[in-house]
Image (cartoon, rainbow, N blue to C red; front, side, top):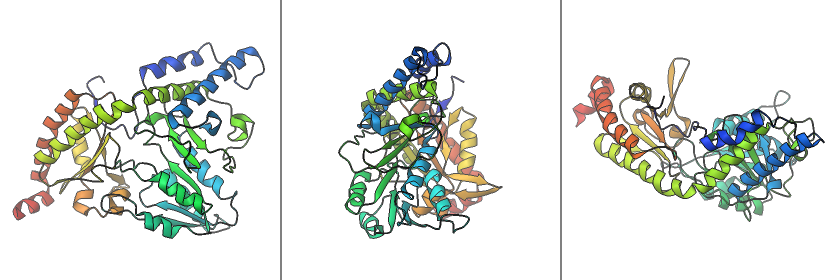
Length: 396
């Protein structure tokens, strides 16, 4: 489908050609088990070490602080679930109202009362109308009962960036573990973990042009950690299971490419995002940007087109081969606005009509021009048939 215009990169990304090439030998002739003592397996283990270094280089940390997982969700679970047994007298988890379900649902699972659950307490911090956290709110939530604070580096729906390094410092001063879900941030903005107070960080390969099924968890040296997956000795006894070498090599190569493309993300990708955003906000009445205009990822734009439904917009865009995402989720036949937009206090009529555009290094200006040409007539057409749109028109 070479004619597809793909603007849903916060959901998943295309596997980079260089990544496919790097992993191919480990799907064919280099199939040895890296834990084996013989040379055939040992040569594979060396490539796992190289990949670990590549991930560490992107994160600005030591390779021994990186352990490979199956995905970002596993990394989130491993980090949060480890924090409780290593702090058995602390029973509170602090997170935000706009976290990815991998964090939110994990925290609330751990909140269920014993004997079914774990009998912990979860505090979800609010955000303001631009999706930003209040540092005083964070500070007020931190007491001697908090075991872990888990706050995303950048929001997957709005791209809003949180001051995680500052929050990590606040946690360290109080002896609290800090974890960040950086799945959306890694590879899009510079990250250097050395010297920060961040204890654990999650990333996912398929968000930065590696295949699905591979992720990593950073665990700072000296941070107490209890394995989530128990069994063999792999990953220095921190994550059991035979390593998926092809996927690990793929992630390493993807991280190497992401590091080289950080400036491209900051300049070219951001310029395309801004062009798209400016044109749509100008040409579509009752359109609004969701999230902070500046403190966000360079590739992400969340726009609400009031008085119409996001799913209808996506279906009509799909006819032109344009892929984006909605801020609403169709659940059991009923439309529920995004929990992120609800937490921001976005009006109901706008939350239902929100569309997230998320770009990558592979998007072109010609693609953006096509979206700018195609989308405004779609918005006008949907407004004409929407009862909410007709009501809005009578007020103008």
